[in-house]
Length: 383
Ligand code: KIV
Ligand code: ZN
Image 1 (cartoon, rainbow, N blue to C red):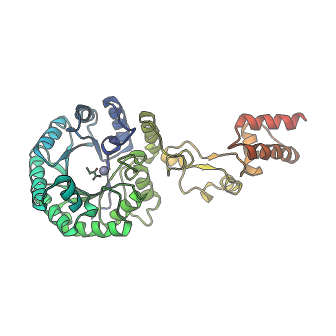
Image 2: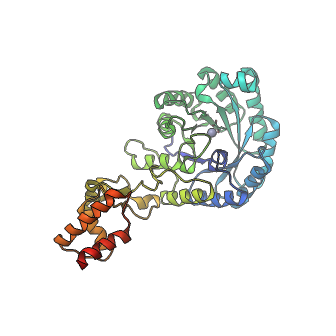
Image 3: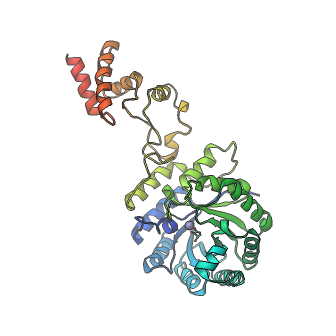
């Protein structure tokens, strides 16, 4: 089995369908260009039956990107599949992604269908999709709460009908890493070489990345994810997290992706400008504080050797540099460095005077700005 993990980006579909994240066709095209630079394998551009905007977006993205696969989502019914196929007409590498829920909860309360009906509709949708394109993905919505024997039956049937990827979503973010690994391991074993097993984890318990990694270790070779982890409710597995975990911990996770990681931060910034919020400051990889250090002990270590407190070079993910934040936890070493950066060369005594005024100001504020430090230095030098 190859160790290459296929990155299926669904920022423009699952990501976009969450509150505050809707994007215009033009914005989706701009984001698609960035995803292309980033090196994702598939861009899921929309859900064509859902709205005219989504239909147009899939067409526009298909025209824009020629070297990467473009996917369109469709429920497992003829109307949806045909609409997706129409939207993908101009894609050089189209993929129809059809889905239906398979858990008993969804069958009983949402679909009001029997297991046999769902199985038949899944097979029909895949067969129809295959008439339009070679790459067909089937998703068993709520797979992680589905009876595994039935999931196995559906998975085998859709592969026999022509699906090349079987996605097993943790739709409600309910799974745990060990449980997810067991399910994915079983399905990978059952499907063998006949299809790629994919995962699509939601983050309701904050486990989306951990579950996706466990799935890869168990045999999944496609991960569905989004920039900044946006998506329904608590979001999806964050692309930047899964990619960097695989890269930084390749000693434990010997898998590769095609992602050019130095584009991760620019992609995160572009998305934040287009939707109504950015990642939280302490978000892994792309958050404002991901490479910021305030504690004196940490700053001292960083100034001596960055690997003391950083497991990755910020430039490797496109962040220009680490930041030493001067606040009440900072030490003399970092303060002296900042004074030098600001053009002041201080004696030990002068630094002592600056440090006293600095700590008294920092005690009263959330952080101390460069202009405030310069004012303190001038005061000390003038006095
Ligand atoms: O979360 C989910 O189950 C989905 C499917 C449509 C893939 O987004
Ligand atoms: Zn989803």
